[in-house]
Length: 275
Ligand code: DGL
Image (cartoon, rainbow, N blue to C red; front, side, top):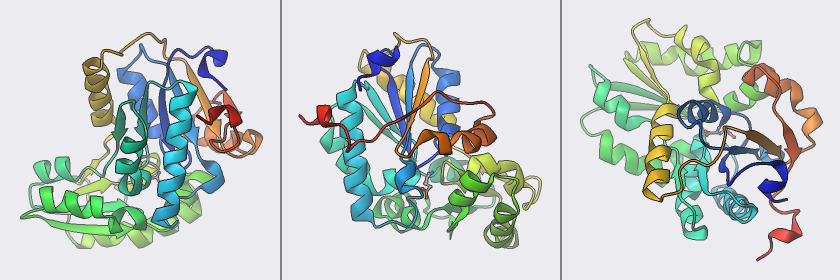
């Protein structure tokens, strides 16, 4: 597949393990109306959160290389877990600009008044060296409480943010943060903004939730301008998934609020991608 066969003009490719990255895509499309987008959900291996780092690194490099060969002009890793373990390897493997998400510890540290911050993320993200470096740089003089939310991305994607499974997991992971008196909570996984109302309900009303979608859109704008490759598209959108798309329609509509044009796309199954 080449993106031009789907009428996309050198799109920005955005990828995640599943449909959490759509929370980022929403911000990208709002700020960059002159770009086309290809969104890839690696649903075959969803969720990434507890998979071995080495596997994720290889898989994400293969995805990034395939997206570049298919004609993407920039990549947004709309998955904190993938960024945490694979951002460096991806940057080394492709020549297009790569924007990698990371939990918003920096904005949280800047805006917290009492210096007590909660970070909700996958286990793989919290354990990563990249996250430890982020804490070392921006967490100095702050109390940062990392909470691994095992199963939460899966429950949001498969059962929906308003489901009983999500409610039970949020009672377990979010309610204790209120007792720790955090005034700022970082949504360190792109699936969690889908459940921000449910998360907010378990915290005192003045608690600030930090979602990095808009900051990523600003970063992408600057980067495309610096590389002289901004614009040329019309906010056209195509999505790909690595399992049979028909099984995904209901989940997507529940989160995105509308159907997405969706094709089967797998980085490994396409011989034309071999260099
Ligand atoms: N949406 C992903 C993230 O931002 C991860 C969810 C998962 O696959 O475990 O970390």
